[in-house]
View 1 (cartoon, rainbow, N blue to C red):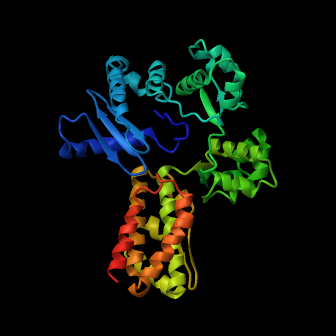
View 2: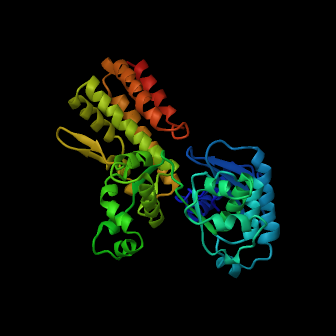
View 3: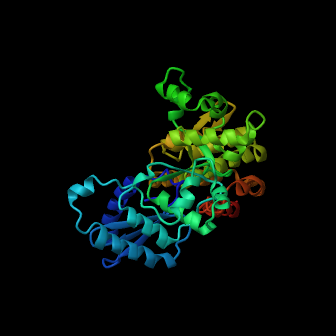
Length: 403
């Protein structure tokens, strides 16, 4: 279901419903005998394999690896001919999709050679009593205590690195291992509406968490202000590093992630953040090249041409000032497709803003904007985040030519 332990933002049922609709449409535009097609949404690539009785949807990041196609087709065939061939509708309805078909789940991991576990992650187990043990289990399982990192388990065990990772991966694929400390310093973290309950003194959620981990409640008022949807984990840790140890901060953030009070921005939300920051930078640069009054006029002209509340509604406009609200709660519950629709609307707004600028200073504006993007935006985001943003360079160039 999810070969990436950090992929918590993607609901398999939403994906299933989305591709049920896509399949109906695809019959009109895709060869009827085609057993595979892809939909590229920029942030994610959806690959669909059509079988006799099921659709196999593979969600991946980056470019497609053609070598994996035959492996996935083989797994799909096995699933249809072995695992669900004689399964009744009643059994399908009560099947736990997160832990069902344990042997098949192991096979997926083994066939795809999944080895993306980070050495800094800390695995912890639950419900191991019903798991089939392997020759590696007796060596490795006792070391999985929720405190040791994967690197420490490798160093302390008599097994090799590949064997340790393979066993931990197997247990994770079976739903018997979870990980803490899986966030990287580059991950951008935002709060959800659930954090409000933890800040309310009378809430039962706060009382429960205070019993389990008082340190979370102690640090929460200071941390909650930093979960603004723009700061990276590294920046958050650095902000309060003089008050708390880094390990304490990471542990508290792990707990808040598990509780659902904060989330790591998904690829789609990272791209939304990028284009929002790009828009703010463009307007700030225009304030310097033209004037604050002119920049506000250009911004209002662009906003008048965009009729999407999730875009125009985040601008806080006053008589002599303005800002953008970066709170990501507006996007809670939206599927990846809708998020990418909003990304397209933001790109349209950015293009409309550049189109509204007076052309007498457009070259000076373009030069200043490019320098600012180069020094901040392109260093802050990865090449994957920037996919699709190159469209803006086209609009900028067109407006420079038209002057």
